[in-house]
Length: 265
Image (cartoon, rainbow, N blue to C red; front, side, top):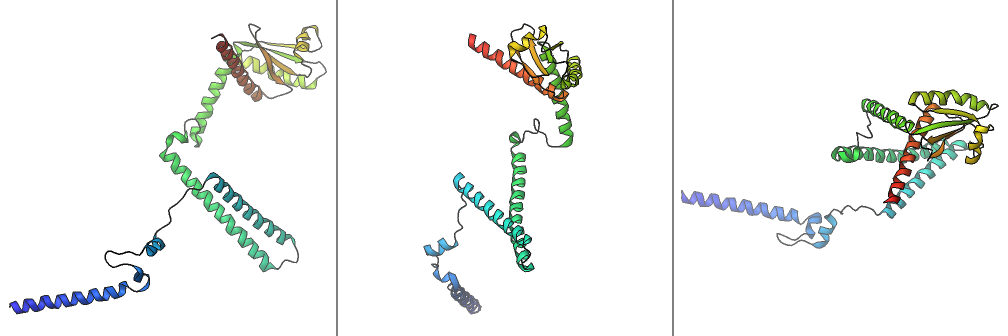
């Protein structure tokens, strides 16, 4: 019985030894022959098999790389177009030029897709940079944002109207003045401005001369305490442009007041 066990163990050792020798033979075949056994590793082999570490290009290298890609793309496109216009261009040559350009175009497209996908993921993982509240991207959020902006604009213009009156300088023979007057009148009524219209060449229009106003129509905003005065519009503009200018006028007035407060501090 014991002899059978010993024989069995002996046969297993022989089989294992044979397999090990076979493995060793395989180990030293091909590139593996440069590798050490058990504890030794050849440095050259490790360098060949080690993956190169990714590096982020410097801004200067990135700029040069982008310029090189752009030039390659432009050169291929120009070559393709030139060959297309030449009547003596063999069809095969033109097709090769088209394929060359299309491949470069596909590379640019693939890069743009990767950038777009990465941008979406960056916004998803960093919601503070996406700013979906101030700059919404979907249709429904945009509608809400426009409504909020419009309400804020109305509030700002009415606040501006509570502090400023409007004076419109015109001429009787000015067609633009005649067309602009109804717009300004509607604007003033909408937001609560006090509006006065006067001819630039009339006695009431002397203020225009002092202000250096020579073109008509010109709309001027005058603060109710007569301490501030500035042009709100020169020439014919639309109702929406008047709204935008009123918002800017309000911001300009607030900015001047803040500067005055700082001076007295």
